[in-house]
Structure formats: C-alpha cells, structure tokens
Length: 484
Image (cartoon, rainbow, N blue to C red):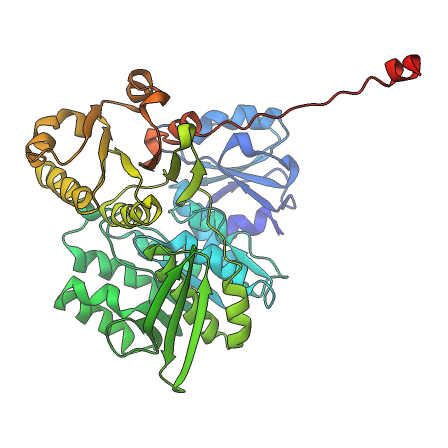
C-alpha cells in the first residue's frame, strides 16, 4: 500500500492534495467495478468511446476521493486529491513499472500470436504447489491490462506470470519495464494483427523486445523456422545472448519430440531430453495441435524449474480446457458445439478447424465464422484462403457472418465454384443470423463457432446449446400429517 503523496512522486505529476497520507491500495479504471472507495485511485483514461473524467461525479458520490486526471480537468469538489498528468495511460504504466521494481521475484513474460492465456493458466496450475503465484487475470495483456495485472504483486508472491499482447509497432517497449520478465516464453507467431506490421519479421522483432533482458528464453524452433531467414536471424540475435530452453519436432533442441499418440481424448507425447539423454513422456487430456504445443511449452518450463519428471507426468494429466477456448458443449438436436468465440485470425482458425475434424467422427460439420480483422491480406485473397482452409478439412456447411464477408459474397461463391459445400450462406450480422436461422436447421452435426469478440457469438452458443431442465420435488409436510 502506498500513500497518495508517494504515488504523486512515482508518476511525476502536478499534485493538488487535500490529504497527503490517503492510503492507496486499489487501482480503478472502470467505475462499475468499484469495491473499496476509500483506498481506490481512479485513473480517468480517455478512449475512443469514453472519457473517464465523465464518471468522476458518480465515483465521488460513492466515496472515492483520489483521481488521476488530464491537465485540463477542473473540479467542483474541495476535498479530493487530484494528480494532474499529460496522459493518464502513461501515468498508469509508470505507476505499475515503479511497483514492479519493488519486488525481486522471478517473473515469466509470455508473448506470441496465440496461446498466451492458455500457457499462463496452465503454468499457474502446474506450478501452484511450489510457488505463490501472481498472474494476469483472464487475458489482460494490453497497454491497460498489463499494468493492472502487475499492480497485483504483493509481498507474499514469489513468482509472477504475465502475458503481453501487441497490435502495432512501439507497444512492446512500453510493456517491458512494467513486466520486467526474468524468463521469456514465445508461444508462436501467427497472422493476428498482420496489417499493422510491415512484414512477419517486423512483428517478430517487436515481440522479441520483451525478452531483451531475460535470463532464460523458452520457445519452439518449429514456429520460427517457417517464417524465413530474416525472422530466424532476428531470433538468433536474442538467443545468442541468453540461456535457452527450446523444443522441436523437426530439429535438434533441448526437448526433442519423438512421437505423439492420441486415443480416447488423451495424447501421449514422448520426447528426448538432449542434455541428459533421458527419454521422457507426458500424457494430456487433449488431442488438438494447439493444446499439444502449449502443453509442451509448459513441459519445458517445468524442466527449467527442476520439477521432478514424475511430478510433471501427474500434473499434466490434470490440465483442463479454458473458458472461451475450444469449449465442447452439447447442442440441440444431437449436435455438438465447439465454442471458440474468443478471437479470430487465420492461425487460430486453422487450429480450430483441426479440432473440428478430430471431433467429427464421421458426422456432418458446420463452420460459423465471423469477419476476420487485421489479417494484413487483401479481402479477395482472404476469402480464397478461408475457402481453401475449410475445404481441406472437408467442412460440409459454411455460414459467414459480418459486413465484410457479406459484401464479398461473389468472391466466396467464385472460390467455391465446385460447390464443395452442402450450404454456404451469408449474414450481415449476428442479429441477422439469429433472425433468419432456426435451430431445426442443425441436426446430428458438429458445429464450430469461430468469431471475433465484437460479434458476440456467445449468443449463438447459448441459442444452440442443449437446454437442461430441472425437476423440482416439493413435499407438503402439513398434508402428510393430515393424511396420517
């Protein structure tokens, strides 16, 4: 806990304080999440949609007296502590970075195009018996989410696990001093946010900045090699100066994957630990490629932490799927639903389609797909790529939702000139899909819902999910006594 006066020094502001000793324990950026008004400091962030200063009156009425505001803000309240700054987001990041400096604990920093949240959550589960862990809540990996995550560190923690996501050049540099990782993990490099970068090498270069000062770097060699010589050279610049724990299915690495066998929803992964020559294995309750890759990355980290191999094997069996990541649900009319309505890019689409194929078991398959944003690919080319990926997995029905796909019907239909699909349909929005469709249109099939958050595909999931009805038994004891 800090005093408001200490925080004023941390963020280099112009303070106007009425109570210099006011204790600050909680940071708030959303007025709806207020819990402890007396010890809360509200950052009035400005976004495209909202100006945080508009909520100060509401928060004042609920007891908040400490605010970080833009220089132009004026107040009618005489009993508040105001910290005036040029940029409230920069001030939030400065505060989190200063807070991070107070703790000399190992911190794992995770970045990549996909898999960040899954690796973070699985590492938390796998390492819980050995450490008191602080980690990013949910997928808090943005310019705002990272400082809010790091602010959670306290004296009881002896390990931090934080994820960092970027969507354009220059963003990672602002996150590095906040996280200050000692161990770096690169999950992979995919298509997400491609349009914001000149090329894949530039995107990789930006992500690798998180690892400039780490002691150890964990990564999959197979993820970088296909990106080309420029990307390999960039990675090598980092790797040459670091202790590395790598894994691969194709080449020499610290952990060489030799065989994977899937059966009854479980996968056994056999590997060679190069340093000792020991043959090791794990079994996980998943069969899709994304889960296998993320589990192997976690396996590397556990070896890095010198966890006993038998312990690793036992704990790997306990891994569970994450909410909003490939959730498998029972649907109406004997359907199965795969809910991946969390994010949408070409790499994660490919992984989700592989999972759909694995779950099909001879059943008809349907893909409900939203517009794909920030692919960095021209729309006609994107349409063709989507069609080819879906055809290669022998998907039977393709239902496309979103204004971009809707306006490019002809491009899709031209790409499907051989009429590979039983049905291909277009809807301008999620509302339009739900209005024009009927649950009776889906029967005895496996349905993959793959959409960006903005399309709210969880509404479709709820609509298509099998409803479980409860029966309530009421016993009238007075009537029983009367009968007796």
